[in-house]
Amino acid sequence: MDSLFSKMVKSGKITYFLDVKEAKNNTKYLTVTASQPSREEPKKFTKNSINVFSNSAEEFVGAVKQAKEELASPQAFSKTVKSGKMTYFVDTKEAKNNTKYVTVTASQPSKEDPKKFTRKRINIFDSAANDFLGALQEAVTHMK
Image 1 (cartoon, helix red, strand yellow):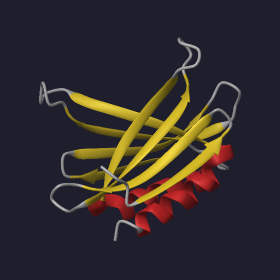
Image 2 (tube, rainbow, N blue to C red; image 1 turned 30 degrees about the vertical axis):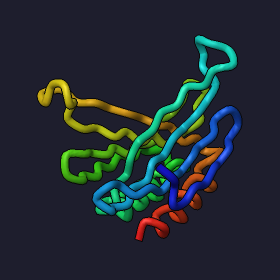
Image 3 (cartoon, rainbow, N blue to C red; image 1 turned 45 degrees about the horizontal axis):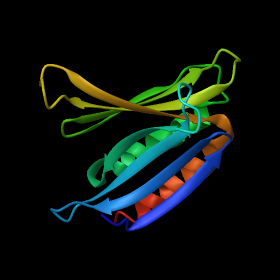
Image 4 (cartoon, helix red, strand yellow; image 1 turned 90 degrees about the vertical axis):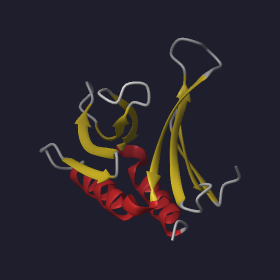
């Protein structure tokens, strides 16, 4: 499936890809992928992706924007965005080296066992937060 919009943001060893696509039912959605070198296998990459659906895109961007602004604060930030069966958790965290970052987790009921949840997470480090947020806002305008 071709993307209606694509943007790439590089930050150190991590590359973020933001792709707006259209589902078979003509609704648009955003796929955010974080790609980084694998720790286990040299010359391979680990990719983590989350999908953001159009009905929650604005609220999702708002939560990421708030989290980015809170990176300078000593307080932790946490916000939940619900969209149907999908729940997004947007949080600020602190690494062992005292740098702060935003983590976005998408959680939904597992297809194999509805009592369990499937979670996917991407981290957005402070050094990439401004560029990532700009690309995210640009992608969401293409979803409208």
